[in-house]
Amino acid sequence: MLRMRLFAEGMIFIALFVVNDKFKRPPRPGNSPLVSGIAPGANGNTRPLSASQLRQLEAWLRLHQEGWRRNIIPASNPSYMVQVEHSDGTTTQVYLFSSARSAIYFAKHGEGRRSEAGWLHPPAMEIDGLIALLREQA
Image (cartoon, rainbow, N blue to C red; front, side, top):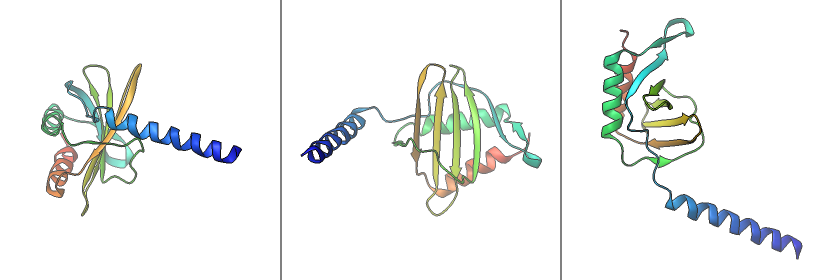
């Protein structure tokens, strides 16, 4: 009897979690301007993103505000990754995956704010172009 009760309570908890998630607004990488960013550099170091790279990444993210799916699990083995700071003090990590099933994943964090994370599957050509743009040395 106790097992059935625990099982029923567990199922109710899971159902409430799923229903609650359905009514949350979709995740978005953010609308606030990018003020700085870092990318992988030579010899395992990092390098700053140029102002041009920041503006182009910001424009791409603004054009792709819709269609993101919620995902709280960090992505692994990205083709390329950058970290950017927004004018509102939040930080976003952008993971780009170039493959037959291309994807872009973001994780956004801020002081005293809930984290947001999500993924989007744009065409591989878009991801490859974004990676090429972000890899360019200033």
